Amino acid sequence: MKRNLILTIILMLSSTILVANDRQEWFIGGEFGGMDSGKKEINAGKSNDDFFKPTYESIKFGKRDSSGRLYGLYTYQNEKENISSSSLGIGYDYIPKISEKLSPFIGIQIMHTMLEINDSEYESAGIDQLVGVSFGVGGGAIYPINYNTEIELGIRYVFNTLEDSGENNGVSKEIKLENGTQYYLGLNYKF
Image (cartoon, rainbow, N blue to C red; front, side, top):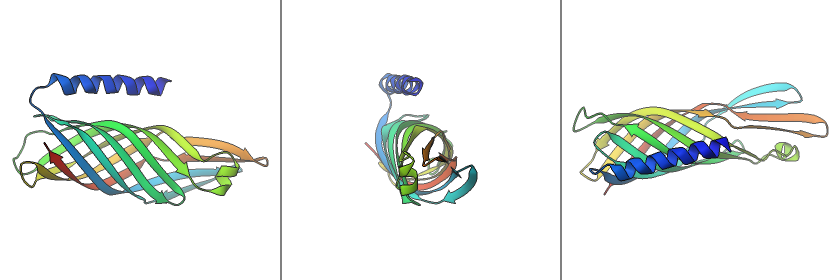
């Protein structure tokens, strides 16, 4: 309930910002990148930390003004080590005007994330999905190809709150998605 209230407030504020500012450009963009993610598994009291490196795709749509951009996004993490995920959220990037050719940016994201686990051991313990909120903080640079098209290169640190536990035949199991890093190449089209 608390997460839904936070997401609703953020969506209301972002829609107010989108309507209030006159000088804006709409944009649609895509990202393709990799992730360094960690997971912590606890089986019958024994802990195991593991890292995996999946790829992901993301699409974002929003408005850009003279100081930054506000957007909604959908991200899909391809299956790796029996785990895949999808996220739906919003983000804001501050883009200071430093150069006509290269624009650095810093930004934040908040996402509702659903992680799917395709593993019979976890499914037998009643764990097949982790749901929670993820927060991203990152930066990068945008290079314009022409007036409407730009390339983006970035890196983002993602904080996760996804974890679950269960039991199968008296043996407890727990899994937690650790914080991770995304690095990506993006293409945006302004209209």
